[in-house]
Length: 505
Image 1 (cartoon, rainbow, N blue to C red):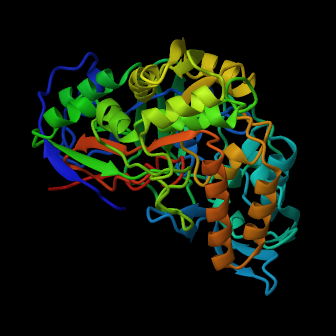
Image 2: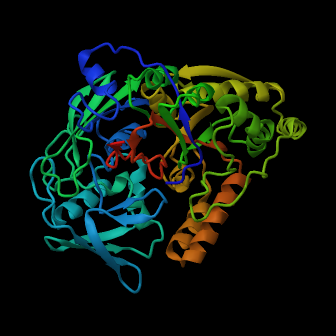
């Protein structure tokens, strides 16, 4: 884990509203009998609408379930590297098209059924045939999957791929029973160390450790994930002791106060989440390259970061975070230049432009929108903010129906540049046939060719001003000082809870 900042901070512990929460949250690192605590209360904003990440967009579901309830053949560690999970090892053929995985023996799903190679075959097929999300394209490269024994499976790719094994460590690589009959929206059936014990919509989700987990059991047996309507409520909950950990805290203006509390720790982890000013390339006025470029010249990204998010985060210039192997610094492509923006708008015949700005009801989006609207006004663009309840309204109107001109959203999926800009039917509406050709050659090439090709793809997208990546979102975690094993670097969508434990000091 790369800890960018680690500070201790202080707050006032207050009485909690229920006896259960008093027992869970005010006991410090030991219970009433002096034994180490085995429960944790985690606070989040952005509640999942259901439990099915195969048909429901957004990061909230895999954030909760991946690595905790569902597992894959491989996982992505805190350094962004591929590590074994359900596969104990694997071999790759000389032509890089066949991956042969050896599976751990004795693994079972939470419904009691054994995990075998047949489940791998079915899980890959489920992505290709049943998933409704654009992420399903990450499995297009798979030609066939064969169970050569109960504990061995061979995956044959259509061509060599530099990206496929990494993708298998994300939600598309989650393993399900081959005879799955459960309604995934309400029941999660995975091989992970936890099961979903309770879902209280608008309040919390409870995870309970499995007695029959195949691997090392987690030190924390009961996890309550509480969902807060806004970031201030989440911050107040960690300050008061109502929760033990505020994950992905989105109230940067309150961090200065929390930094003084000796009972808390603050960790600024990195992430793969890019805050994107999304321009609908398929609709006026953003079907015009000059108008899109004008917007990018009009926006002062450093001012957006400093004003909206108190400087927490990092400018990146493209949809590629520094943890990706093909990162390049493109932050200078569109320096803040209002005169250039006005010139481009005049050339496009778009002076005194009026647009609608659909803004999801998320703290970062609302804060960013206010700054962007002011900057656009300075160059003659009148952007009218239209609040869009998130996730329900935003996902339907913007993401599904593409009924918008401009929006802002945090894209958290790892290595998602091609997902966002490689499909003209995606909500961005960016259509560049050459991009797919360059990306395909890069994926099939050597590791060096992969890096060079993906860097070319990123430059193409930036040159076309397809949208504006404003900044890389930090993964800020505020937690009880006695809580250890925090996976603060969000290298995928997952909030990995499996290493948490209370210090015995």
